[in-house]
Image (cartoon, rainbow, N blue to C red; front, side, top):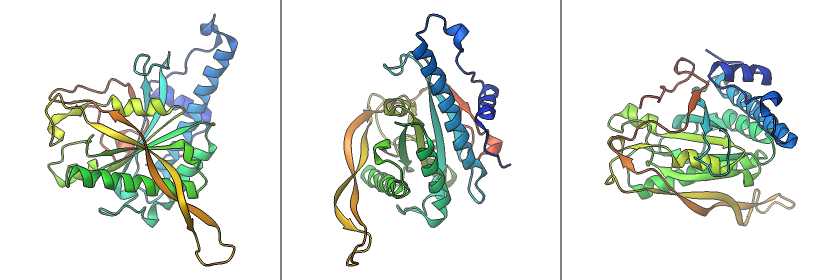
Length: 298
C-alpha cells in the first residue's frame, strides 16, 4: 500500500488515531504565560508538518518502505524538558543506501537523499538530524565502527551537496552495539544492518533516545552485564582544500568533509532482562505498511 503525503491537518488527525493528541490549547493552559502557550502550539504544528513530510518516504516508488514512528521523551528523561518532547524516528534497510559492505550511497538512493534534503531544508530553524549506521555482529568492533563512520560521512556529504546545513547534522558511531534482532541468521543480520535517523529540534533529545535504548544481551556477543558501552558522537566539518574539477580554470572549489569527534555517549548496559524502551513510541507506519516488523515485543 502506498501512502499519500498528508496535509498538516491530516497529519494531526493521524497522530490522534495513533494515540497522540495535541497538548491542550489555551483554556487548559490557564496561567501559562501567553508567549509560552504560543511557542508550545507552534512547536506542535511544526512537528505535525515534519511528520507529514517524512510520510512521503513511504510513497516513493521502487523503495522499501522504512519504519516510521513518533517517540515521546518524557520529563525526567531529558533535563531541559517539562512536557513530552517529540522525536521523529525513521529506519531504513541498509540496502536502501548501500550495496554489501560498501560505504558510498548507491545511485538508486538518490531519490531518498533528495527527499531527506528537501525535508531538512523545509523544516523550522535549528532542526537537528542524528544518523546511526548500524552493522551486524560480523567483523571486529573496529571494522564495524569505521564502516559506520564512513557511511555517515558519505551520507552527510550527499546531503550537504544538496544544500543541507552541516551544522544540523550529527552522527553516532553505533556499529553493532544496538542490534534490532538476533544476529544468528542471515535475515537477522540483514535487519541489523540499517540506517537510523532521529530528527527533532534538540540534539540532546536525539541523543537521549539512543542513550535510553535497552540492550538485550542475547542479541550481542560481548560484555558482562555491568559493562557500559560508549559510542562516539561525530560532527561533519570541512578541512583542507579540494577541487570539484582540479586543473579547470574557474572550477568551483570544495573543502574535504571530515568527521570530528564532539563527545561520547554512554549506552545502556547489556542485560538479560532489559525490558521495553522507557520512551513511549507510536508507530506511524504499521507493520503492514512497512518493510519492517514491529519491534514492540522485541
